[in-house]
Length: 122
Image (tube, rainbow, N blue to C red; front, side, top):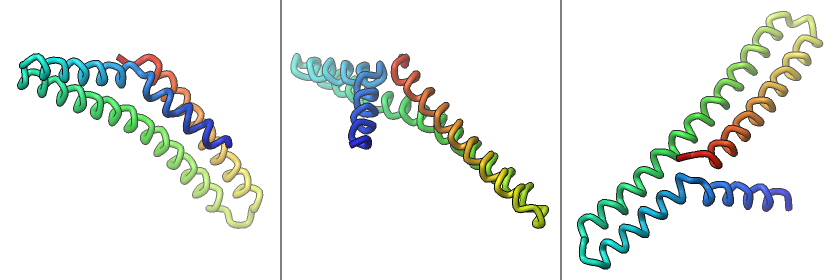
């Protein structure tokens, strides 16, 4: 049930973003232009609206992937420095705990950034 709520929230955030609404407005305006006889202008408007939305979403996804990659690098560094001293099991446990906290923090900041970005995009 929680997955459905999360998915519904993500979908709602996407369809209420200004990027998406601008793309839909461009598509509808393009259809109106085509219906009134301006076929080439309408087609260009529809195409540019779709391409613009795809570029903007790609930018947001790239920022999210960069945050995840940074968390993975932190995990790798923590584990490799802890396992250099194989006689201390506690160091490995501490490194894993630190790594888990880093991933959680990165995921939370990415989620906050995505939610904030989805509500404030142009």
